[in-house]
Length: 134
Image (cartoon, rainbow, N blue to C red):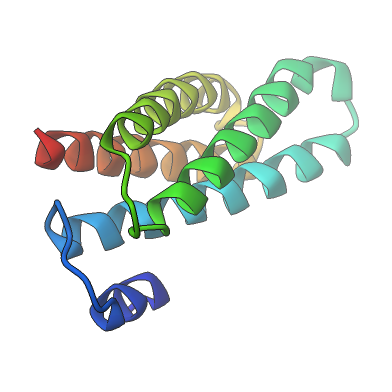
């Protein structure tokens, strides 16, 4: 059981969405932030860094969006659905862009393959949470 789920299980209040869906999204978003940060760093160590400038930029943007999103998802007291929804939508957009670009480089750079996979998982988990919020 993930820490997100364990902490949600200890929350003294109620949730506006299914705790399992929220925990899955939190875990996917957190994993994506880490994967994107690592992919950007790995890209900086590659020989032809100029070919990876767009990957690095999108990795860093996606990591920042994911970090902000998971922080807000972790706060359930005085929950603001409009803010959460906006962040989840931004996360979907960022993960789509980053995942698409990383997939373009996945055949050559394994770190891009892993990052693209994390982005796709995050994108899906955010979409599922958005659907559960409606």
